[in-house]
Length: 315
Figure 1 (cartoon, helix red, strand yellow):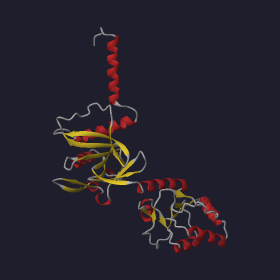
Figure 2 (cartoon, helix red, strand yellow; figure 1 turned 180 degrees about the vertical axis):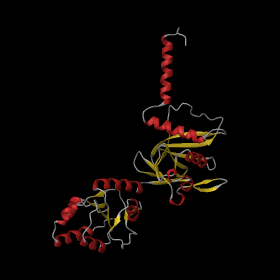
Figure 3 (spheres, helix red, strand yellow; figure 1 turned 90 degrees about the vertical axis):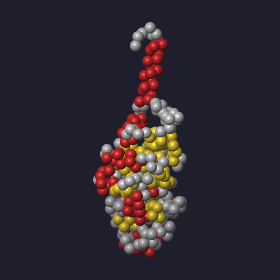
Figure 4 (cartoon, one colour; figure 1 turned 135 degrees about the vertical axis):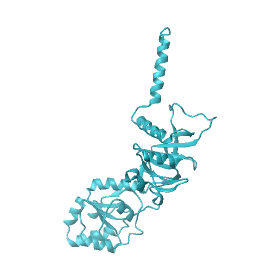
């Protein structure tokens, strides 16, 4: 794992750089865990996780202010002798001049944020989980439809981008066209995004490249989206049996995570955008506990049981 640059994390989280003259290139974070170095600042360095981002909150800051200058310098130098990715001060706390001087000598980046310590730690861990997650790149289109992340797959030229454009016109949001980067944030969550170079662009055969953000406004695009459902577009095959009830879910797998997958046959006259919308709403309804196919099945079974009990009754 190559890690993520400290500068990129600082940009994402809007951190204040207390040593702006320091070159941040080469400073990388390799793990998503963070550490509050209360024990280390008191002089205990056994089992110190130096590879973690170090977070300074009110408790650590107040303790440091109570130390005399000689003790403070000794602690600072011992602490910064370790290979630490960076130090971040929370709650708009400002490091003292001695801390910044020794940090610059040790080539240690120091940042600050106005957010509370607990809130910022949760945000930082989530950010690092995304940036450090295993990642693959696939050919497809990712859109946000009613809050559900739909990954539209299919052969080149089958109509993925056209379907996405129709969905955008209907008020939904584009995440990525043609190339989708998928990251495994957890064992149950996949997050998709667009490469920087193609973000907000769609390629339409016969027209060329269009900028969705410029044409339809910022409300029509989104930077990242969890992948909840995969829609596979394929040419209509008369000899193939397609699912007509939906009692049994099909799945596809990315990075070891399974995602519900629907195969949609393409045929003239079928409005793909409306079908995709219906698939998104139906999937959302299933997650909320209602399955229309199961409800129909139970209704049919109840009707058959009623007929068996009363064979002479007329419909």
